[in-house]
Image (cartoon, rainbow, N blue to C red):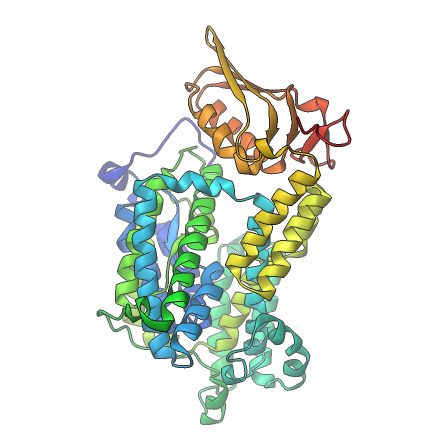
Length: 540
């Protein structure tokens, strides 16, 4: 990755002329990752697999012109599999084709809401969600993804899995392992070895090959060797059936009336909430990775994602977000501007035109292995360890969100996480009057600004703090003083940590004062802190 900080690529058409060669190469390399993942994500979402590629194409060819971020790659994401598959099953009530069309109607309306969110600049509301609850939600999604894909990776028929809840699927794993189709299972196992073992490869030339592409190639070769196209494998659907790319008005809005309305509205809320939240978190993460230290316009970017979702919803594609893994790959491959996202979409269009016969030779087990790998990264043990290092209360919050999400759904899970966080704060003595707002005083002396925070600084009143921080001119000397605060939580400290990076990158000086007088709840530098003198914060 380039580490230049003085040079910044031009934007717009000037940026295209200046950086097209680097963006073309990066976009092409990212498309090699996006192709198999898009097929796998769509299949796991009960959509025709080719429609996942359509979403990635639209995310590049259309959304690149509206995006508020230079480096994010738009496309389907594993984090939405659970929602999309649930929408198809519940709205279709056993009829996947009907469920697909009704889910498309939800996606179109969710996209319209995202456009409005961007126009009214509500992107800042993403800060309301406690970070450990967000990571817990993502970990739960990872576990849910793996709970189904493990069975497909060893050759179990999708028909045996239909209608099963995540906990049921997890309890079925021993049975599936003892009743596997061993040819399919070998392909799944080899694919997993490649994906999990690629980090240990030391040959630089080989490291440049995307492991997902290698899994695709090896899977096709092994599928041919084992003759998975034989009719004997038809009942377990061993090979991908990409479906036809039928461009037309596929969305149905029949769910807006009758007894389907509550289900329709539930998934509208879930698509909008989770899709927007993931896109905004990706935008923030990519800002931290950008070697040129540019800052995305997250509200504009959210509207761009909404436009993309309206288009793909009408055409039959999956919902899209700003996807973090492909965006990081874009940066690592030397992408500089939004044109890399465009080239990524155009490359996928070329693949669809030229390689559809090859796509039909891809084993389902290879795509299942890719999704198991994605799910494992979301729910890796290190995520639980990280939460523990931040503090026991963060591990509790993380775990509650994971458990409730797996046992119910994403909305209830994230709601449980927020509720648990509020209860923890109150248990630690945060007065109720400080839950959503805290007294903040700003004074100025010359070029120096002093921001004094009283009471408590928590995730639930972070928006108030950020509003005051935004009033301080760039390039000034800013002191944030917590001497009069009795509690500061992890979400606030992490946000201040990122704020300091951006503020000082723009020539300012940021000083955090009074934090050492508060007792950290763990050894982590960004752990929540409370008063050293009181067992509980005084409720005054």
